[in-house]
Length: 253
Length: 370
Image 1: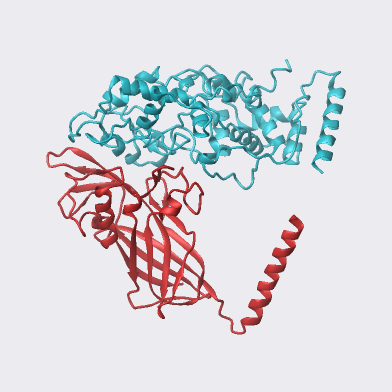
Image 2: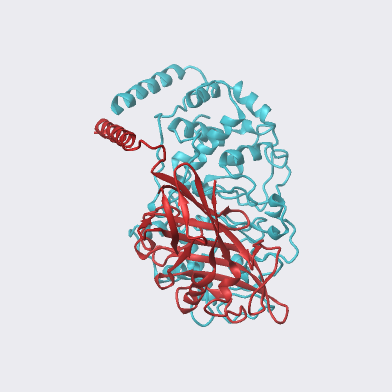
């Protein structure tokens, strides 16, 4: 059985090599690598955890200690309108005191010119309530409530200064089906070129201040803690979906 | 194939027993089997990764177990890892601070050893990022076993048993510090606790009492004043492993005496932060906290409920959490009732795994030798 499996996979690889060597008379490979790099910032300044205080639209002075979110269901749209979907891609982006993962590497993207990309912040319901661990979905990564409530889609923790100069906590844990949002970003010059000879990097800006001021203006004195799915979580999700993310640059390396 | 191999080792083993019967060397501790070892872990614990250069083997784990109980690893042959990590106490020793080989007291309380394959950082301050790295530290620490690695290697090299064991596991009779660490790490990775009443409940073999269930719910829930009652434990001790592996200032002092994670990262933002340990077998691992300041679980609950000390690096998850309206600047209190605290403690007792603390695979392999 094992031998058969090995044999068949060897045959399959052989077939692939054969096919690709036949169909490719030009030297350009059919796929290339696309890297999405998330640039955490506040009003254009890099997000520095803990030490640096920032001010939001409501005038709250705050510091961030932890920022984490899931990026999933990435889709790229070609200039001809057709789409490439990344199946089973669940990526945790995080900036915490000890851990930093800000990039998603997507090998095997069909060589083409793309005009936009979109992705979900969070986890679709099929995967959210599954015990199957795909990609970065894992109950031990500090992003799961439990297997009944599913994953946290977005997490921001920090502190802010109240009008009486006391220190308040910011605890935003956003999740639940109703807070799943899609973000769509168009290429600045209308094109993202991917081809096998190069690495294409998309810098995606993620501005923390937009959490507080796109759809809804949020004053931390009124809403500093969101720990359950519901209306408050949906407000935060609406805000980050509406304007937190932007396509910052396209680099071809 | 397997049967033949097993038979072969049974033969070897019997030969070993026969040939050893006449002398006193403890070489009868042969692993019964060799070959890759598969950890058996419940699905709900999640995936884990083993280092590519130190996969588990039965003979490697057996050697690691010997080394874990080996007093030659201390400068005066008085202490082994197991002196402070005692199986009956879920691999702790009941002390706030443990005495080292030369009688000096350590600076932090012995951590329990459990479900370590899911751990990314070790020690209260996270200064080791692998078990291999961790394992060599207490051997050398002047407050613990206080022996140079060269001295430890030399003792094992000159022993009648170890060179052959190292050869079996690593292919060479030459003992090295690196291989001591690897074998210790292999043994420690097998310390999986997954048969507590909580696990039996998760696998539908045990129906908890109403109090246990209420305790579990409170434990896992972040409170929202006026809406949802919660004990706020799960934000740090979350998931089925009862730890998320993060570091927190949990409000023990306004002026910390031990900088914790700051000592490792050099960042003042990490002052007084310590690893949130697994609470598995917590009823067996008193005293509590990195400095063992609390003798009982009741004292621990009282701390979180009434005595949080606010400082610059206090965790937002603690600063914000209460069952009553939080007023920033006012003392932080959870406002749990006496009954709720008792319910949470009942849940904590559900995490005791009596098979884990009596599992012969984790016990002293030399015990029947002497």
